[in-house]
Length: 354
Image 1 (tube, one colour):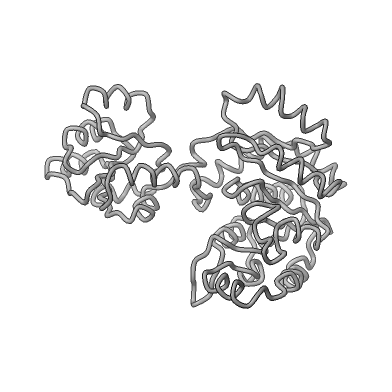
Image 2: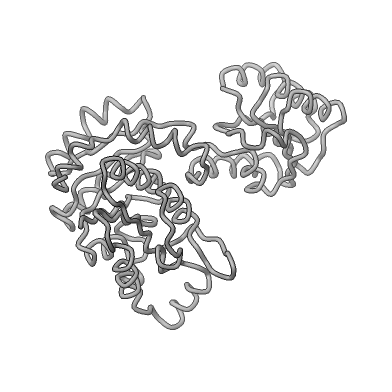
């Protein structure tokens, strides 16, 4: 049986999507695929049990149905953190290895998905990604997502620590403007350090989008119109604090953005609605006029009313779109096709002798 650990240089790097994509690929060539996420951080509570939402979503995508407490035997909750800091760490690694023995049965390949930073997250209990990967004697792929830069020094450090266990890296969310530097500078550097680049996945606005329904939930807002359009995806936003003429110039350069505007700016609200924005976010807990509501209903434009001010909501929107997880089936097929077409499967198969 083959074991592949998918880690990353930072959080929100795309581990869930790439894990699912690899699982679907290996299934497509006839392999029995198992899955584990040893440490869970994206948590929710079901029947008084802490579960990892990413792990549940991944199991569903791969057609697996194991007990979530086995798939993710260590779920980081506030209670667990308090216990660890007060009393010290239990033997979490033993718990992980025990669960792994159950999950690997009858499998050709096990995909183990990390949480947070591969070298650091969980180190206080000796269950960082690198600790788990070594305990499982797994091969490792590291994802390096471009935020404002690549973490190539991190990749070099990981190579020194893992040696041949690191089969390569995947560069994720690479914008067009930096692609020349990636091909002409970064890849040659990594290759000189014996780090194989297994794929370059371009930045894609759909993957870092959020549905109107989930956006309203994240902003703790009230969705008052367009409820039949609540699954529409929001990819970007614009702030409507300027004069109408300037707003129109900026708006025309975007592709149906969400518009964040004060609840008292009916002039901007009407322009955004007529321009068929993806949704209208009204700040200050001020509800729109009947004219605005009527026109929004006619054009099926969602309006979300939030309590906080425009600046605060704009900062939250920036964070939401930059750290958006895959947990949306409407994005899964798109993401899988994107990854499938930009990963060098020949290199991965060769590394595993497939």
